[in-house]
Image (cartoon, rainbow, N blue to C red; front, side, top):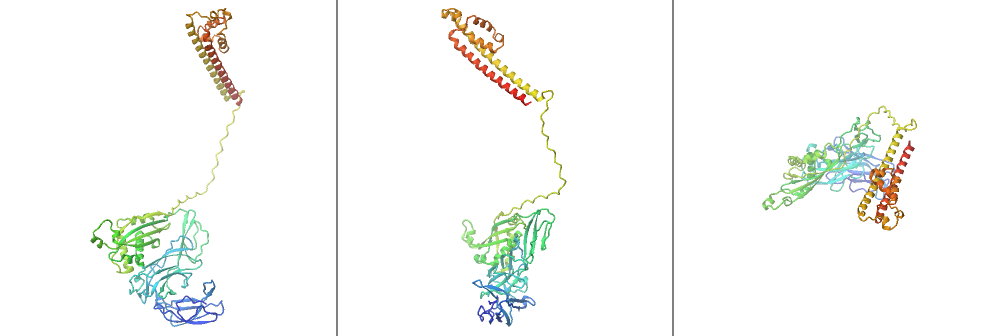
Length: 585
């Protein structure tokens, strides 16, 4: 059997063999009453023993410590062994040392996860016989314990004792305890099905941890359950198992605040505020001041009071700075010697979503006109409570503009779903247009199509005729000019050849035949007066055109032929368009 978690000294060889017993004295320390303890290891592995040890009156009336021999520990090899059974105590068993008090027995959980807690634990120094006495103390351990002081698992946290200089200060009640001396952040998972607390126990100079300490109230697990249209903030102790499905109208069996209206609740977004401010500590040793945990706790509490949030949200670091670093530019030596030592305070504020104050509000308070004066006043009061007159008055000289980082944007709540009503009758789809029925053999659409096609055909014919007329005009104009030039010479084609005129080729014949094939009778005479006479003369074998101009006339005739072909193509295209229009009717 292993030794129970009691401050026992020599006298027993651990572990005890089955069926053996031994006696040992308690550790010789001023915090522990001297007694002789008898332990036994039973033969039956299933045997269990319970022993209640009476404590002194400073723990309260009828206070006692219960030990269980049925508890198991694992050795280095992983083998489980039971604690030895305490069968007898000769003398008293009083634990004389403990911390003087907690700042708040009820600890505020800022972890929104179910089954986890994140709290700040503030407590005062060790007291012995009604006075602060840390001479025989190394530090303080924090444990998760049940209501019977039985420790659950390993230490959650540890802090060394602070050089507070408060030894000898009388503590007649909790109100006299400087509870801001120590500040520890504790984060842990809570086992389900049982109530748990935090216990602070001094660790004495021998390295033994006292088996009993001051306990907090039962830890409350505050977590958030997201529901449709609302956010449910639930508070549950460790004895409550919440496995039910929560809706907007369901209240859990724990102490809960549930929005049953379904309306969205405004929430503050999670944010991180980072900043710094400067302290003038006068003639104090800046390094000692910055390293004092009591000072750090006082600074944390003062800053939390200024911005209006719990201390659990803050993380503060103090760094000593010599005067020369804080004075910029070249200054006189006398001024440098008069300047007090400085300490820079760097802080980070982790603001959870749904907090009572927003990041913008905190930034505004830090930059208010009276912020330095207000922080100086609060810090002076907190330091007086924590360390008395150990340090000279401290002044906050400046507060830098903080940096704000939004970590979680609050989602816009979804609008409430309206109550269902009668479904509207869907409008009938638009009727498809039906083709117009033919009346009397042809419809209005057909008549319009025919008229359009006829118009296109007429325009094409008119354009072709105009083009022909223009070409003929150009040919006659050229011929007229040639007649004027050749009249002085009297050179007819027949005379130049020396033969009869009837034997000469009729140069004008192709041109007149081309015109006659396209233009209606009388068109040439109507457009160009005199053209008919010239054509008659050409038919009798007299050509008014000289031989050297025959090529020019033939070129004009060829152009007219090409224009005629183009006109015929346009007419054919118009005819096809007309046929397609009639086919669609």
